[in-house]
Image 1 (cartoon, rainbow, N blue to C red):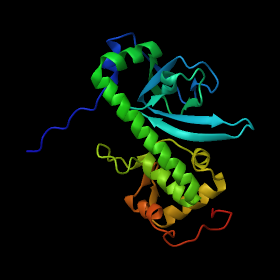
Image 2: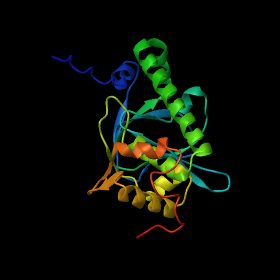
Image 3: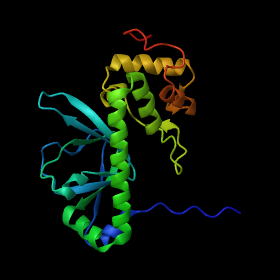
Length: 230
């Protein structure tokens, strides 16, 4: 008989020992915090999806991450960032816990279990950001899109078997990979034609999409013409 699965670590009870934690429901397409505002707390996403974006001095916007249940947002305040470096916007209805900076710092200092968990989380996020930077520098937009779709479908995570991507549009995908929506539309149609993804009310990602990321050349087609098929 296989051993029972270990329950996922819930950081909130660890933090609640040191101060009040307030959870709120935030509807779709609402701002959790905005770039440039005071960074005096962090957030823990209990349900839903949040999009993190940055805007350059020239006004160009880029999506840098999609946070899901179990993720933290705004943890830069813990290392002395006085202002938010990004904007967090809900992609779906979310339940979000506000964690005051002083309370989290005390939990880090006094609770080894929470401290170890948060350190592991931050190190894993740093590794993902490094992979994303390498991806942007060296891979084609087609490979970048395939990688993002696999990540959003939780491919390769031992505790997640989900292959369905939640609510995310092609414009957001385009911002995430540094391409135009036209290019994303072309590649999505191509992936569907090759059987790498499926549309059935929701977007299903097949593990075979991984070969786009791993191969030097795309499965069959080249990068394709500028205009996608309709």
